[in-house]
Amino acid sequence: MSGQWKVAVDRDRCIGSGLCAGTAPDYFALVDKKSTPLRDLVDPDESVSDAADCCPVEAILVTDPTTGDTIAPV
Image 1 (cartoon, rainbow, N blue to C red):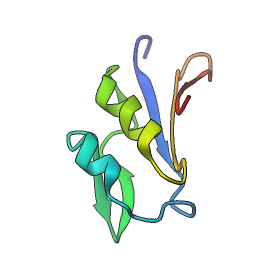
Image 2: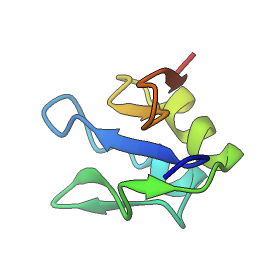
Image 3: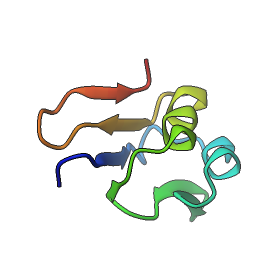
């Protein structure tokens, strides 16, 4: 798992703006009008952190799965 990022979406907080799917379509999709990560663990990719940073309600959390440190949003 080392070197990967964990991606989580708080679906209760998500407002379904779609910015994440537009920013990182390989990693996020809207399911039932809510953001859903396509995989829980991903290789580091700037588009994933950009999606977390641009979420208007900060519903996306990207962390280091080994340490728990937050990668995005910053």
